[in-house]
Length: 447
Image 1 (cartoon, rainbow, N blue to C red):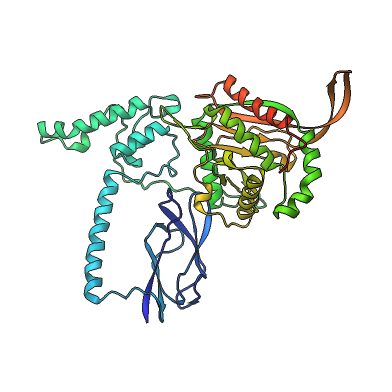
Image 2 (image 1 turned 120 degrees about the horizontal axis):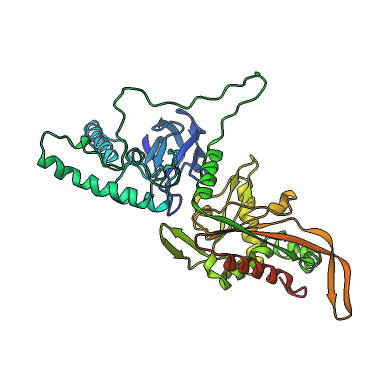
């Protein structure tokens, strides 16, 4: 018998930790190779952690809802053979305990100096620039929340935090000049003095049904995250919308003509989504000013065009998998990417990398019958396009012989963009270019 160390696997370049949501096995259970042992969740997707070996689960090191770092040991599996990691000796264990204790003390001290860079627990809004300054200067969230902001609704501005950093740095000098004055008593004017009473921090109390008939249900983890993202986006970006109606009659006729042959040849269903994604990717190449992100006062121009595709999950939550290098795909490749991501999203099989790196997002509100919508920007992107439902409508048709009324297939495109960096001319020109590509669709084209 030997012990195998089950570690939290790497889940993508930008994913450093995950939350344990459910242990599928308990101590004493037999585990087959490649069998799932537990379920984890990042800030975007949920996934399973399989065992690399067969054996018996002998020890679980973390509980549900614990946050674990990538590469950290989460459990031990007793094995009968194969590649294993020997159990540590008593002396080694004692040494490891001492080292672990020192590391824990060191981490605790580090937390006092610079708290984890996680602002999700704060009810206050901080701009990306303020967050970056706080991270660089080692200002904890608790310390940041003591700063009295001079901005709208008491928001902490760039000048507020820079003034705080300046006075904070001068605090040791002030103490050296007056040994009777503790550093903690040196308070910058822009900082509210900490409370001196012994009151415990308030805890959130669940609401109570007044009539005893209402059902009160706590949001699940993903809905809480989505809620935070949406509020943050509205508070961060100056949202403005442009709308345009598009005649997609040629696209509808072409798809009806080729969809059966397409599925037979490619083994994939041909929906409207890849056709629209193709047009959006082309328009982004024409207007790269929409393929950017914002970091404080800086604009980051993205080299790759990675299209986010908003998808509804069976539980009603929303997720945005990303089609990487969408401008380099032909229609067949786009259809395969759309179907693969959509199917894995519904099955809960997306990987963390599948939701990373998006540069622009498209959401199909027409799936639910909506004619148009005003979607919220997926930060730190600067634009999102909503595709409305395709409808048969009477329309004026211009011909060399004159105008007449006919039945056409039409839809609305709703473009939300960040007015901090995208003005109406650019935002409107981009969505117009998408419409032009769709209306100029070649009914004689191949796949």
